[in-house]
Length: 261
Image (cartoon, rainbow, N blue to C red; front, side, top):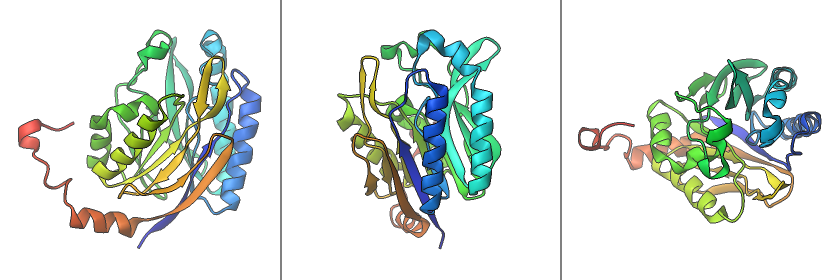
């Protein structure tokens, strides 16, 4: 029976202030590691937020931010996921980086760009999914608005994901959508979900937090309020295996009728 202690880190991102946000993230990683966490998920664009006007300069800071997180994860023996702006060949992507105890083992560029907030005007979209084998298991990654696209989560589940990590900046007033969709993605794919949202106010947007750790049965193991916090909970993988054995939705699918994601 495999058990794992996992964490979601929630904080108020200081818009455009990389060093301040890096200090918050590093301190939070140390705190969750002290509580026994083996996996920690940070919010979306956690180093700077959606400071569109300054994104090229902020994205140029990402390599040193990654180095700092890698070094901290190496010291703490920790796996971490969080998204940052990535500058590649003149295009900026919203990219989640998967760090396994200091080693960068995978990255995922956000597939679905939220046109309501002009993401598609300032960012490039990714074109591939990620399920990675790590020292603690198989992790799938999605980012914020991806949550509204169940096809992606099913694809990650079919690729063997045991946990889906979701960094986010999900604002008010859509918190009921957030809570409902997180539980739905966990239940329908029979896996664990770690959702790390930000909180506080950035420019005109008010973020509600409500980061969550959710079991394959849709049980909310831990949920945050609307202020800076770190959630920590134990995941029992025998629960996932038992649920998948009892209700064989991944096996009973009719891909011959409706295709595969």
